[in-house]
Length: 490
Ligand code: ADP
Image (cartoon, rainbow, N blue to C red; front, side, top):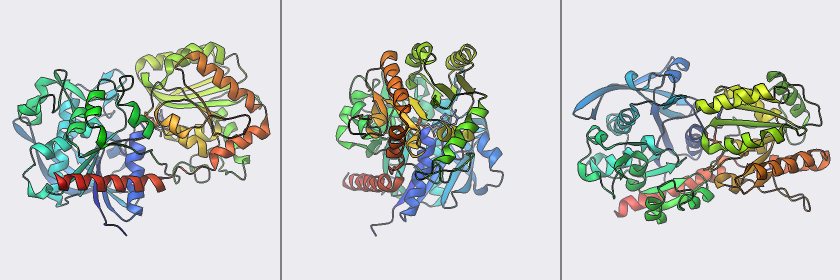
C-alpha cells in the first residue's frame, strides 16, 4: 500500500452534523472513503446549535484553546465525535460565534460578523492541531470559510517546525461565495498589511477569503472537470478568473462521489419501500407516498418532476418561473423542496397558490423529504445557471429518477443527453439558458415517458452507473501527494 497519509479535512459544514448543501455531503463522505483506503483522516467544523442539539454526548478534547484574533485572544473548547463510527471529527466550540440557528446566512442575509467568525475558525484549526499534537501531511480546506488556513500557514506559521511538512489543498465548491469583507477587517486577521496586496488577499479594495485560499494553497481543486475549465473564463469566473488563470497549472477537477450507504434506493432508510434495478415495484409505492406527502392527486400517466434546492439565483429559478405557465399546462406534476432567499420563498409560495392541483411546495430544509423526492419522482429538474458539480442529479440516477439538466459544470459532465436513435444516454439536457430551451427539454422527457419500455430502459441506464467514491477518493489521494511534493520542493 502507498504511504498512509495524515489528512485533516477542514470544512464549515459536514453531513450529517450540519448541512446547507453539497459541500456537507462531500466533507462527510470523502473522509469516510479515505478512511476505507487506510489513511488517517480527521475532520473539523464549528460547533453550531444544531450539532449541539442533536449530539448531546460529545467528548472534550481541549478545554482551553487560546486563539489570537485582532489584538486579543479568544477562548475555545474543542469537542469530538466519531463520524460514521470511523472518522474522528473535531468541533470548535465558541458559542458567541456558532450557537445560532443558521450556519452563515439567514433568509434576510449574511450574519454581519461572518468575517470574525471564520477568521476565528481558520486560526483555531491551526492552534488546535498543535495542542492535539497532530501534524497533518495535508490540510484539505473547503470554500471561503477556510481560505485563511493556507494563508496563515504560509505567513504566520512559515517558520513553525510543527507545520514544516504540512501541505494544503483548497477545494472550490462554489465560486459564487467569495467571503468578501471590507479592508478594515484586516487587523482582525493579525496578518501583516503586506498580505493586503494584489498577490495576496486583497480583492478590488476589499479582502476575499476565497482569494486567500486560492493564492496561498499548494494546489487547488474543484468538484468537476467541466467547472475547473469554466471558472477560468470571464463568463463563469465571477471576477476570480484572473487569479485562477494565474494558478492555472495547479488547478484540478475531481468529480464528487456518492455515499451509496446514504443515497441508494436499495438501502435508503427514509423511503416507504426500497427497490433496485431488477425490481422497480417499490418505486411506485414511493411515488404514491410522495404524492400523499404533498397532497397531490396525479394520474399514473403523468410524470412527477422533483426539485430539491437551495433557493439561490444560481439554480435557474428565473427561467423556471418564466416557464411555469406552460409547464403547468402539460401532463405532469411538480414537487419542490427548498430553502434560501426570501424572494424565492415568496415566488414558490405564490406559484403554489396559483397551481395548487399540480404543484407541491415545501419551504424547509428536510433531509427525509429529500430522500422521498429522490425515490418518488419520475424526473429531476436542475436548470442551473452554473453548477460546480451538483449532487442531486447523481443521486437521481441511482433512484431511476431521470435528470433534466442544463449543460453546465458537473451537470454537463455527469449527464448524457438521451439519443432516441440508439437509446443511449442517462437523462435530458439543454445548453441555452432560457425558459424556451427548458420547456422544449421537459417536453421531450414527458413525451418519452409515454413509451414505457423506452422509459424504463432510460431509467436503468442511469441506475446501472457507478458514481461511488471509489474512483474519486483515489484521485484525491493523488492530489494530496501532488500537494505534498509541491510543499517539499518549495
Ligand atoms: P449545492 O451544494 O449548490 O446546494 P448540490 O446539488 O451539490 O447543490 O447539493 C445539494 C445537497 O443539499 C443535496 O444533498 C440536496 O439533497 C441537499 N438539499 C438542498 N436543499 C435541501 C432542502 N431544502 N432540504 C433537504 N436537503 C436539501
